[in-house]
Image (cartoon, rainbow, N blue to C red):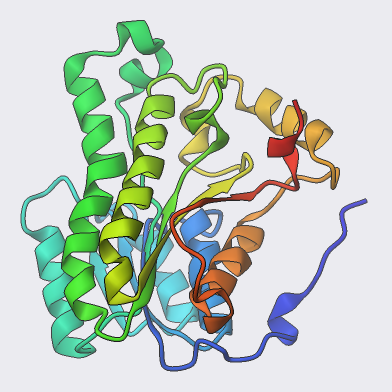
Amino acid sequence: MRREVNMETNINPVLAGRKALVVGVANDQSIAYGCAKAFRAAGADLAMTWLNEKARPYVQPLAAELGAEIVAALDVAKPGELEALFETIQKTWGRLDLLVHSIAFAPKADLQGGLLNCSAEGFATAMDISCHSFVRMAKLAAPLMTDGGAMFAMSYYGANRVVANYNVMGPVKAALEAVCRYLAYELGPSGIRVHAISPGPLKTRASSGIKDFEFLLNEAAHKAPLGELVDIMDVGWTCAYLATPFAHRVTGGTVYVDGGANIVA
């Protein structure tokens, strides 16, 4: 039986007054939504984005539910949209404290065809949207984090071990984890901490593109010492903790939120 803990009724507003940008909410099953919900429960003010007009009807009600002060469309593949978002943040808040990057994409044919069959164009697209966009966000966010801050990027176990059918996203997530380490090094003198978060498998829209994903879910639950799958709020609460002063000297590492599955061979 799954053990449920209702954190929302017990958490203190330790992030009150903090300004948080959460990128990657697609619906109420998104990891990014779990992060936004946890940040808000801890008192943070929110900025949230949707990918395009198709996604807007799913994301806008969630932003309204959480009282997001800034909402906007953001497709990191479209020139100028990222810069426009940060200009809005600058004009509205004048600063930023927290950044969550929870976006990933690879063309379906390149994702499902195995790494050997991944085209150069598909590899470049996956790397740009899933990895380098975090670098671009960090460059725009850092000047706004005048009192320090925290940045988060979402990885997966397939960055470090071969996971069947994860294909091109394995190398891409490995690069993302390396980016987090190097950004932590570069931004540390400014008091900005950077975390790669590695959740166990979750049923999200992004995961639906991975072949035999149900097998990964069952295997993860079987391997995890806690004997349970994680959910989006487990990820959100972990990020909320890392965003607080309680974790003010934690940076650069990959934080696993998987019930301990990563420690089991």
